[in-house]
Length: 243
Image (cartoon, rainbow, N blue to C red; front, side, top):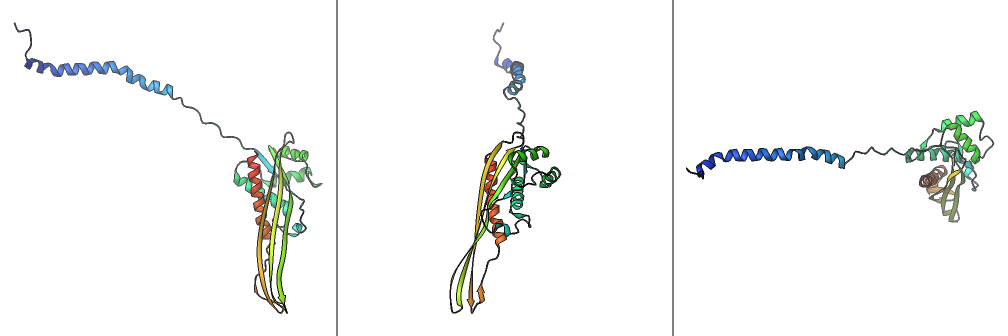
């Protein structure tokens, strides 16, 4: 009897052996593939996004006008409302654009001041500002002063027998300071200062007392507005940094 199969017989059974081996390997490896997603999920837990920080609600009161300049009160800055109100309006707009604080509408402030008869005596101190803020339901109140709001004019030139040339230089300077007051404790949370400066030059040529050519600047409101914008922008930066 022949104990060793010939090569022809082995070739006939080869597909059966291969199929059986593949089936055995798939059965043994199945638990590994099923468990892999579970282990992956355990390694990477899903975390909830952090909540956005809540912004402070702030009210900006009209600034005092305590300028050291001699001419500031004569200008119609901010539609005749005066430099103090004009700077406050400008600061409100800039703070809203900055987005760090939640700024309430100034009409609400005016209504509360009129209803409660607060601030009618003039300068508002920290305790009165805190009281106004509590009525408005805000976290902090900003009060401040316009300490300089002035345009300086300088002239120079030479005239001989009515013929000459004159030059003018206009220099506008604005300085403001502000305090942020906690409405709960009346504590001063931050103090900031800002300043701005703009200038304009002009010249005239005259013959016999008549101006024949050149330019003469009469734009003090515009110069003061530009200087005030610089001062308020610096104020916003400092108040935001000290939040």
